Length: 393
Image 1 (tube, helix red, strand yellow):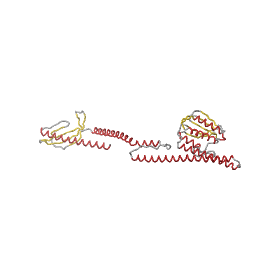
Image 2 (tube, helix red, strand yellow):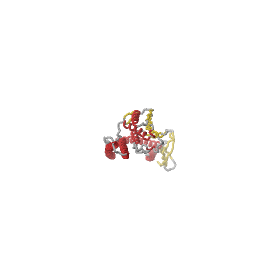
Image 3 (spheres, helix red, strand yellow):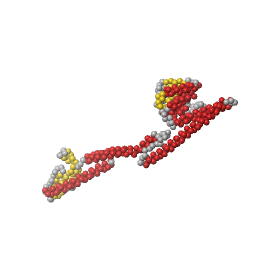
Image 4 (tube, one colour):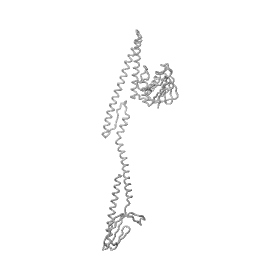
């Protein structure tokens, strides 16, 4: 557009100049005819001037500035001076024509082009916007459907059909992929549940038989120790199986029944249960009230794992302190030194010390529950105490 504007400017300038010069030659011919008929010079300043001269000169075509009384200003004229011999006399004929100001032409061209460009831009903007909205509507609707897609849902993903070949092929592949993923997820889920269920039964049978043998007669000390060790391993295996199944359910978001819970009441209830089993003193300090929205079973698991972890790792089974403050729950127990790798505490099967009674999954379950609901777990060591905190939203 810029180059065409420059080209148009010079083209119009040349075109107008040629038209002016053509008119000058035409007017000169008219003046010559008038002198031929009248026999005397004809003048109409500043447009036409003619006079008798002694000799014939050369034709001159030039631009000149002349004061125009009618406009009361200097005007630019295109001037043609020619010499003619008419009726035996020499005449100097000067004709002039007012030149259109080329600055005005340039401004007119630029304004016209700017107006055209602006109108075209506005039209194309809204036209393309409307076209793109219509064109991409199926894509964005399908994108929203994919964002809301859930593996646990029984309903297959529903996509908007499109006449565009690429979008249509994308819909086909997404549908095939999601159906395959849902099928694999169901099979894996069913397999996990079946394995977890089937393992529980033989473990319970083995546990019962070992208890019968231990309670029977004719056992020497070595046999008793072996059977007791086997019994503890079976208990740990049973607990490990349950916790792995729980982790799988949390990761698969199978706890879809959140409710408003009073965390203070939940903590009191769980602490009372632990107090009936353990001799260690478990203290609850309430400095505020916390109400959260989460699954009730997972709330019990969250507090149970925090307290259980504190009891297992407390030095000499000393007192456990639980504190509920402003959107934060902390559980602390005595310790001799800070843990060496606190960043690994919430990883699966990580154990800072060799505790045979620990499965290494308690804190991992806490992390998964916090991830599910957007809570933030943390660990710190202050004044000889291990402090585990959970900050709620």
